[in-house]
Length: 403
Image 1 (cartoon, helix red, strand yellow):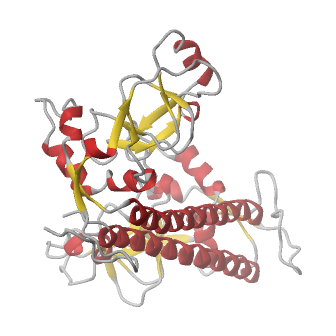
Image 2 (cartoon, helix red, strand yellow):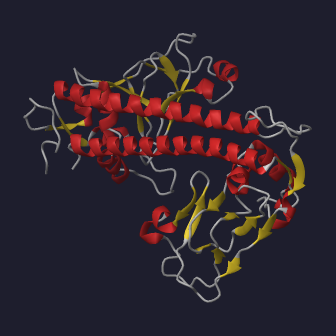
Image 3 (cartoon, one colour):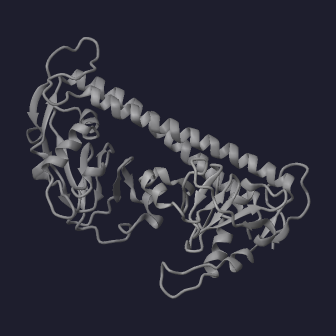
């Protein structure tokens, strides 16, 4: 069994020592004063500690909490839930003084152990695996991991100085990831706002933002007059590549989406739908959440028979139409025209009813180019963020002894 990690900081050479969680954490049972200095908090599996004010009616909860023995917790404490079976059974308080339900156990780090390090270490798979192994009960969802079992779990631990060095790397990387997530969300908000301004709103014949030189009113059309359904069954079982459509990325090969290429890799493909190049395809049961894509490849591919496939006339620039499909205008049309009970559907007979305002082709091209440029920037930031998250996960695996 490993006694030191695969990656270490210079100057640290000692073997990591095996410690029980009871050697690292000390339980505290302090009642919280009922005032605004100790806001109500909640424990959320996989997220840790969050303000109840973000999740519930705060005034009702404060009233409800009167005369209840809510526990006090401070920054660096650990809140443990014996009812959570998977990752997230323990979380760190990053928020400072707070009140939390008495159903949770509260622990403080013993000695000079680094709180952040413990927060990361005690949420790693090997500890969670031991928690699951120790669970007790007979009904799924009602199993428990009792505190004595939890405190008896062993982990390999470095000295506090090395804990601090490791923690700082993880904190820096986590902060960078958080900043990139915020930047990405801002870009998506900019795209959302831009789409609202680039297309005419209800009752308007021109958009709020236009490129220089374009002054003509947009022409009202019915989408059904500008598109044609082109999907055909793969009756000859042609060995075409299988694709899926995701809300964010559009068309992607199933080899990228599913392990071992997905269920279409070796399946009978005669019932699936052929998608020619330069075609749109969408899932009528999920178009309301963005499940529509444009295939710009050079060879025919296939998708599930659930998808509806169509092409546009020469009057529509495909990238312009794709931007329109991602706008709130189209979302409102879906809401207005969709049909069904528990699950809503938007079949081809509905999409052809959609009214659309079209500018001349050069203006369509300008709009498409601008939106595509922003989409490419967002896609690049998404890939960078994914790489950062993978790097963090790789570091966690290499900088800790968790075997």
